[in-house]
Length: 199
Ligand code: MN3
Image (cartoon, rainbow, N blue to C red; front, side):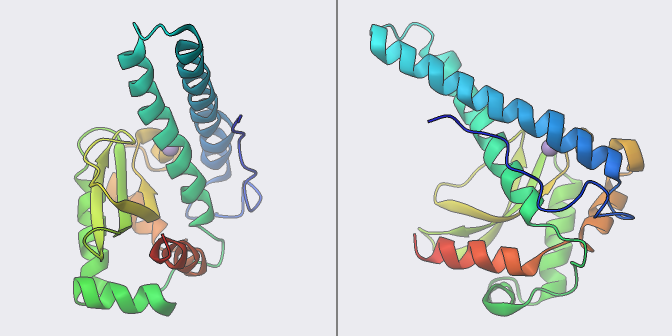
């Protein structure tokens, strides 16, 4: 199977003024595409290793698979998690579950924002349903794959790599995080949440 870059669900400029068209274009067409290519390449190389029975570089390709595969998955979700008329409080079943697991929407919002702001280097804040412990957790992910908790099914993701915000927000990561809350597509988060519950 070969993976391909999913189309953006809206035009490049649709998320203005919170998310500028130029960043969206570069982020999707170039950065996201590189993870698609990296994932395909890693899968090919691992397939080749199986075919030859030569696993001398397996450590390298497994790392590439985890990095690019996670980058591919998180970016797919990142784009659908946003919508031009987004934001506001979490609605639907996920909104109810956020209250249950975090106390209130505003407490959840504070923790998610703080986790995103404090990511060391490049990474993500991820809201995930955890199948094994049956609760929503906020994870602070470094790169695309480090600090994950087994059983986590991501449903809402916030990219805080510099490529995600630097053109518009420069070093002000906190302003990007604040802007992002205006874009959340809670319908999409509910879709992934209901899917996660059935896993
Ligand atoms: Mn990114």
